[in-house]
Image (cartoon, rainbow, N blue to C red; front, side, top):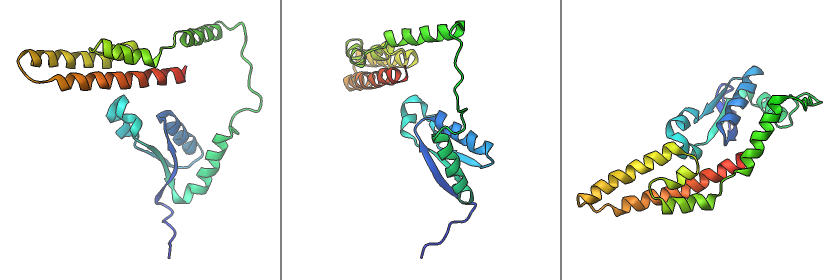
Length: 184
């Protein structure tokens, strides 16, 4: 026989892929007087950009607030909280023109995932991430490869480390470029 959960126990409302979505949902719920918790947001922040994508962001609410929270979620999904008539932007606005120019420039200079993989193979010192404009990761990979080169010169058998670094660079630089293209 199933028993009803305690009204104060936490239940899952929604699983979010992006932190912005989860935090926005929590803020919107709290503005409606519903307490919410995003499980995984602190753990995701600790893992860094690569492993964070594998951590679910679970928006939790109290069981007693679940029905109201679902109504708020439906309202958000149907954008009922937005004005009925969207305000039109002034076509002579200088900031709007600069924004559109930047967007067009971003699309025109979109990078190619296959090139990122090729650069990773041809330049094994973080070339793929350098192409993907992830300079911090590229520098770390270059430092690992330099350290590995020093170990190899001292007689260590460390070829497998170079191969792993190049494979990592090839796979994840392509993913980074695809992610940037989707956002553009």
